[in-house]
Length: 276
Ligand code: 5FU
Image (cartoon, rainbow, N blue to C red):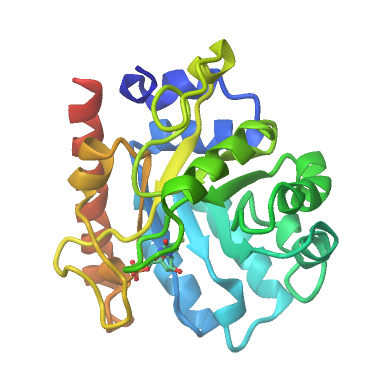
């Protein structure tokens, strides 16, 4: 089945340029690791990306938590993306009417669409959230992930909500490249409508809530291991934040070593999955 194909084989079949870029980057760097850089100072943000850059396929940002944000930070992020060959994902979680999200995505202080290859949206408003974002992002070749599931305790994104997210994505396959989710979905499997077109769809599954040393945090986060995520659940990319940058941002060698460890575990689980 699809999830036993290699990332490189899957890249060849993707029509969306961002989905293709991510799969090609994973294959080239032999890394299915994304690092979530959730720090509040530009200096720390850049120094963490500089040290983990060689080990990642993707850097995930929350640009609105940076206290000393200036537009030049985006140029530096883009320079690092070229230098280290990674894709950029602003984890904005849009969730409003189409007109509002199109303005939030294109404008304001951050102008997310101008620099972030990938962003994401909650399905809660219905298909109009995709239409609004797509009006901005599709002409730029961007890709969207729908939040079909979350990693948090007590999440409401489950059962029929998750199935409807898959149906929404299916109707917008030119722009929706996959899901934030805890397991493989789309294609044959969850919400299999039986159509031929379903058999050849290939959504990317990016999965947060990954950690090797602790089970969760004090605010509802829940962690699983790279092997549980990639091998057991058939996801494509592990997203790791505090498990890599830790709580002492000055320990750059330790941060690099942790990134290397998660990269190795994520890749070993993938090799096991594709049977090589
Ligand atoms: F959609 C989600 C989700 O379901 N869980 C998450 O943890 C997003 N996240 C993000 O992944 C969250 O906003 C953080 O940026 C990151 C996880 O960070 P951690 O430090 O690895 O817990």
